[in-house]
Image (tube, rainbow, N blue to C red; front, side, top):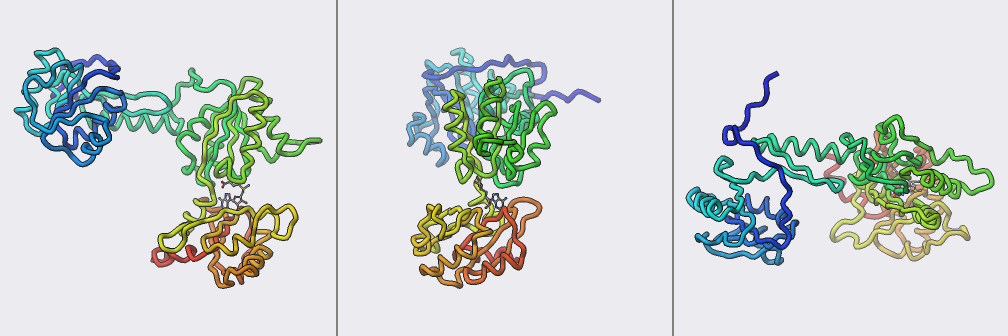
Length: 415
Ligand SMILES: C[S@@+](CC[C@H](N)C(=O)[O-])C[C@H]1O[C@@H](n2cnc3c(N)ncnc32)[C@H](O)[C@@H]1O
């Protein structure tokens, strides 16, 4: 193997890495084009007193000026513009201007980054990214190599494949993490990161299984549906499991399907942990109520067609005293209805909706095991859905979508 050849412009020059704390300090950027546009957000984030000198800017840079994030001086650079600056960035497409700014910077001892000529610069902008409170900055001398390395590091931090094993970001406590609808790619970046940090994972049946397979050996995985509950309610036993492990000093991730607060009993778990004095982090998840229809080609809203979608649990039927849903009102609304946990009761629900005014020919889509390899969509109408669910042997988990949106993308999906 040969060592990579240093970029010609940087050969023989070893940069000294440093993090500049620029808040409240004057920083001058010369040039308002694409390069400035890319670099400015990170400078704005530092809280620097930012001055941009350029006769013209891109619309995005103009928007930053309009928002008061920087002061734009709409004119060409003049000698003296770097007075009082701590740092300068020159990014015009005129080499003579760039050289003049560099010369002033050298004279005034202001570190100056140059987009056109790394060899003439006194500061190099690293390829940088942030994840989990860490700033990653890579300098290789070759900007493309730096960016590729930065991407690899940030991606690794995000998916947990790169982690400082000796450093624990989380002490004892509980995180309620929404795992998304089933496809392991549909958990959030934060959810995945917390999962990678867990000592104990208490997983729901609908939490993405593949994510559990990736966990390191030492992580204890507890199947929430198998926790023995003896004289307690199942949910109470789950709460106790979370609390006991966290009290024993573990970082416990409660991995749930979809979003923790959409028919997920996340609120009860949060209250139980809070009562036990435990810190709880809640990470929202992509709920099956929106993502499962989407995965099967059904948008829950569509312009000009529906101005609302209503998500309803069908775990108790419409004539059950325990039902908290106003089915009559739901029938009378014109928008999309999304039913979760409704496979068993769909016959009674459909009949109730028709009884209160939803046309029997309203389109219905039933999506079983959405976003997984076993995803299956079956179509019906309100009038036929009970028979179709029965004949097709539909089993939970399934999301049932009712409304004109069911067919709105049909043309594209048939192609
Ligand atoms: C107890 S609820 C939990 C919902 C979850 N918290 C969410 O936000 O998606 C379980 C119901 O969600 C729906 N569900 C969850 N994941 C699903 C999937 N991958 N495909 C179809 N339905 C799903 C089914 O209606 C299932 O009975």
